[in-house]
Image (tube, rainbow over all chains, first blue to last red; front, side, top):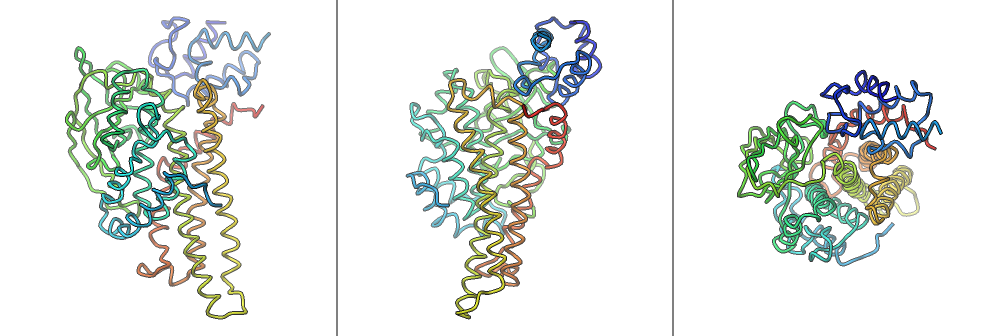
Length: 78
Length: 389
């Protein structure tokens, strides 16, 4: 799952570094993720993992790192 | 409709009526800073209205700040907007800086000296996007250097201190920003343009080149991303909207006095303009309800143990704040134009008691202070993932 998240970040995150070089817990916002780009990341994640992020998850913290994105998806997948 | 009277609101009402109102025409005509009214607000210690009581400040919340802006804007839009913008800066420091002895001491000093803080978020090359910076804080030991090419600094030449956004460091991404407080002794501003605008002329907001250096304790440790979503955006949108509500209220009040004048000249008949007044009074009520609703919600959230961080940083709250800004900026112009139709040629004249021209010119700025289309684009993008669940 981590690889798939990194691939989506590479395609849609418009961040300043290659996601392959980012640690799981690295701060994505410090890596240049904007709230604008994060919407596209969310849409791609919803499509890829067949989940819908409820509004309570649509906040900065959830999309703050690759690990926190995985935790959110795992929670939704049950 | 009346707001509950407090010592702050009655002080603002007195300053508005006795000091801001008599100077408002010259402030507008000469595009000059509303010095008299701002000095009067300082004398009443209203520049520290939001500073917590334990530091000696007024300890007001969002609702009361909103009322102060609304009251002042009925008398002088520029005074109200300068006051609003200053409070936004104070709120950023008070809500995110109290962990630092330096910022605690600064707010204590602000109470005593009534410093006026201006905001430096605009910058050449970012296309109006507050959450992006070109300039960066350059660290040199325990000091920093910061230069910025600002496209507009409201009351920049009249402020004591500046609160400036910049990239956290020269290697940081454009959206990885810090907020830095600069004091007059440590910065220089070179004005490189004029402020000769349609309205909001007394805010005196020309472009400046900023050069500064200072000790690193002047940099807020909380990332600007968090300060922006939790404080700067909600305070900006609510307090701006409150100023606009005051402008709309002033225009409607002129329309009311014009209709009353007509009614008195022909007792027994209802003037045709009275219908239009009835209509616009309902629209004003809707605008007021929108502003008050969001201000109340914000005040409640900010009083929570987490200072509202969880909800304020959410997308659904950002959408609500943006909707408030766009809706009130649009309805303001609509209300003022309808008041102009009611007052007719008397409203069109600049020298009549029911002159509407300045309200219209001022009101037209509302859609441009963070362009409404930019906000619509953000909302459109957020609505792609928001579900309203």
